[in-house]
Structures are given as C-alpha cells and as structure tokens.
Amino acid sequence: MRDRQAKAIILGCGSSGGVPRVDGYWGNCNPENPKNRRSRCSLYFTVDDKNIIIDTSPDMRMHVLREGITTLDGVLFTHDHADQCHGIDDVRAFTFLRSATIPAYADAETAQVLDTRFNYIFHGKPNSGYPPIMRMTVADDLFHMQEIDADIYSFKCPHGSITARGFVIGDMAYSPDVHHIEQKELNFLKAQKLDMWVVDCLRYTPHTTHAHFDLVMEWLDYVAPERMILTNLHFDLDYDILTSKLPQNVEAAYDGMRFGFKI
Image 1 (cartoon, one colour):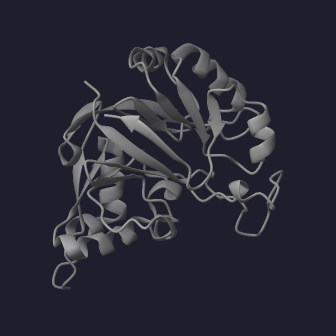
Image 2: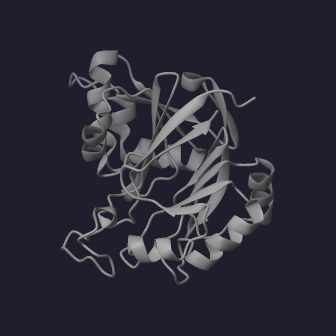
C-alpha cells in the first residue's frame, strides 16, 4: 500500500553541459526566463525525515546549498557518466555529523566503475587519516532500501553504449538518461500505474543516447502515468515554447521544481 507521502525536488534538469553552456551559449533558450537556467540532472526526495539524492551531479554543492539540504541518508546512482556522478566528493560534508558512511546503491556495472574511479570514496586512503565516506550496495532490478524501508524497482534504460537505470519508487518513476525502452520494461512501467514519471527528453529531434519529444509522447500514451515531467533538457528546448506543445498532464522541468508522490 502506498500510504506514505514523499516530497521531491528537481535539483537539476539540464543536459550534460547545462544551460547556458559553460561558454555562455544559451542556444534557443531565452536567457530572461529563469526556468531556462539548468544545472545537471539530479533528484532529491524526502520521506519520513529521510533525505535521498539520485545522482551526485557536478552541481551537487550548488544544489544542496540552494535547497537548504543539511543531512543525507542515501544516494541512488543511475549510471556512471560524469554529469551524474562527478559531484560525489561533496557527499563528504554529510558524514561529519553522522560519523558514518553514506549508503549508496547502484547496479553491478555502475558500482564497479564508481569503485574504480572513486576508490578513495568507498575505501578511504590508508595511512592518510581519510576514511571511506560511502558504502556501496549492488542493487539490480528489485531491491530494498533500508533507509526508507521501501522496495525500489530498478529498470533498464539503454543510453547509447551503456545501460543506465531508472527507478520506480512508490508511484513515481525517474529515468533521466535513456534513448530506448524495451517493450518488457514499458509493460512493467504501465503495470505500476504511475502517478508521476520524470523522464529524459533531450530535444525535439532523435538522438543516439537520449529520448526525444515524439518518442516520449509515445511512451506517455502507452504507459499512461497520471503526470509526466520532462528532464535532461538541452539548450534546444526553450521552457515556454516547449510548454506550449505539451499535453495538460505533462510539464517541462526546471531547477527547483517541486512535486509530491506516495511510497
């Protein structure tokens, strides 16, 4: 039974370069609209006073300061790309008051890459006085997240040459990086009777590693969530223009956007 209320914040909704790009390029986005200023993708949610972040984007420090997040109880990783995990060092600050490592969850492939790339995060630095700051749990398909006492479904999201993961948490699904979803996974999502699906929609035209507008609208028709939020928005997609094209139950994401769901 989904009887616990969770509150979520879109910490960042931009593509890998953000909007504007680091060189100041806004593309088709109107720089006068604050909702076009997009940092890299991440989602925060809280339930029963437990605070969880999905992906430690390079903008994580800015995200948590902006939203006043002062404690962290767990991190979920969708995949190992830099725009989803290279803010991982900023997790350290959350260990100071806990005096304990922060739990992390990822599929086997992502866990292995993160362990290699950020070995010091998960194992510390011997003889240096720097202990580990995170402990990894390999989580494929269905797993129980002890920190929020909830079962989470991890579904496959082909993303170029790798397979990222999306998560179904209660009646909300989050899949920020995906260019194709197998019929089996679509059937699974449809069966969940989702209230909210936050999903990748990079641009209007097809892309080799991300979903595009028409494809996402096909998923909307088939999976039939009550609501949908489009994230991982490239500088091709001006907020107001995109919004004008959307069905009533679909919204374009913006940094700091809030919504609720049930677990």
